[in-house]
Length: 529
Image (cartoon, rainbow, N blue to C red; front, top):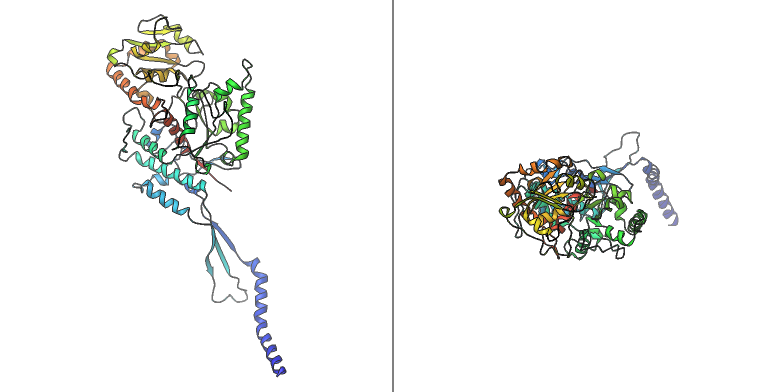
């Protein structure tokens, strides 16, 4: 019985031996001969670039021409800023799905989990003669989409909705519907504003201590610094405490407060201010991944102080990449209208606009033009040289005569002269708008506030410095009918320059945010990891 069992075992072993040898042979050759192909799903960053604007925005009127002029920028973490390839796929559909449907479809895509699945096996019935058969596998790796990808997808849908608005119906709004020649494209602006209200989220870094950080003047010529910082930090609609949900990141320092508390008076040394900003950016760069991820492109600062542009140059990427919201919007000093935001200079002497708003009708304005102010910078001396005490219709003063009210003079005048001082911006522009006086911008290289939305030529007069001697001729050439139209438009756009606490829709706070929103729509942040 034992012999029989042994014989059976030997026979079974001999029968199995060829199979064992073949298995060993395949296992030895298989890894070297097999072909493994990993195919990555296109990242939303590259997908989004297909639907980008295709150029940089200089004006929201660019949407009238198919949105050309918007540049989609891809920023990778290795220090390289690139133009993203764009074919405007999302915008060329004659009838694209609604924003909500597209957003749902996109977000469903992000619910896919990362997995590696075998998508094809080619198993021939018989291997070719004299060749060993090796199974060939093609593996597809599906990428897990990040929160950044989701953010960029939402922005892409907003771009598509804004583009669609240029040929669509006017949006409904219970508060205000922009309309008229004061806007480059009123329908596009309104849709963009609505998309901002739905989607825009700002993360405010909590690092830093007052008075330099999270603080700013609210009752001076630099009042927009303090007002904006306070408004954004108290805002529940736009501020998010979760940085992963933010499209932009705010650096909450006040240059005006740095000048007051950090700068050594009369030292002419920017060093302490520069060091303060460098140290702050280094801190947030070490604590968070967001600055280094985009090289600062999705970050913004805000300054109404004359030294805002100078201090921003302390950090090269802040100057070159970040959105700088500046009163001193001087293109000859590095202000870039496609990236930076022109901030209106509002002199809130009492911290409120109460008592400064409103003025008489055109028929009750007896004076052609008015200016009173110190002799600052290169332009005002030229203005005073040609017009001080020279003409009763154009009253220009270095110092306002005793007993004469500055605001009464604004309300008496048809045109209010707004020459640049040491820097290009002037609070007189907003003062003119508040009192219903048509502003006359006398400056070179100045970009007026919200120029990407507002058509300044429809409600203001722009005079080059070289044309100051012809000032009266220029103003008199405007017909009474045209002046009445311009003056009425000043009253209609005034809401965009009003300061409210808490902020109201379409006021200056929201217009600043909208300007930042437009620039964030301008580029794509890649998460190339």
